[in-house]
Length: 241
Image 1 (spheres, rainbow, N blue to C red):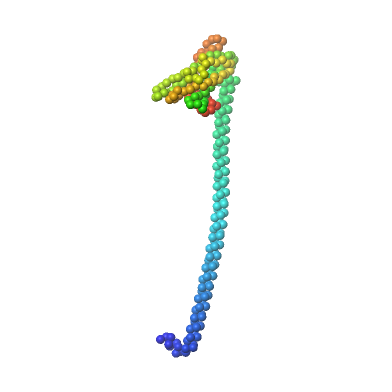
Image 2 (tube, rainbow, N blue to C red):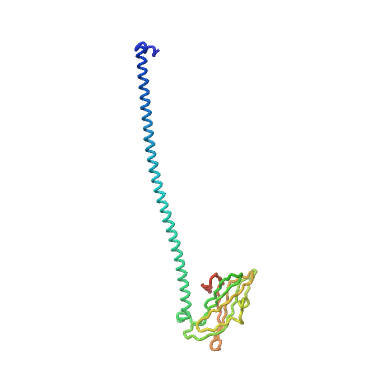
């Protein structure tokens, strides 16, 4: 109805001309609107791309800083580890120097210690052979006037075997026993030897007894007990009770 009325009002030519103009206008507006949308999308894509590039750059920078921090932390960790190792080695050297100083003070400066004959240390060191050990027995005298002392020592290992208490003379375990463990010195002497522990024997104490003579006269008997402690190195003596 409306179309017929418009045709009658404007005429067929005017009606189709107006329709064509409207169609062309709608087409132009649609094109402009599409172009506007495309341009807006391109601008938005460009903005997002720029933002992404900025984020990638920031991420790369943070990754670089994180790697630098990781290297610094690793260097610091290694430095701390080396410093701790140096401290431990320094403490070990200090302990060894104190032990050596104490030993030579006993020999060369007896006035700093108690006077008399001393059973100073009994060192035990493991060997590569099963149950075979070597020992060092350190004897010294601390008198201000040094005279030669002589005598012999008897060493007893106390412990347990198969759950029962047991005592064994070191002399009976030695690989190359002499007639007896004897000494003769003016300042100090170290008696050495090797011995084999019986199977299933667990040593706990080392009892050293010495019979001391001077000028062919018996000076006295001395006994000292050490804790059993065998190490791979004999630098450190067994701690005495």
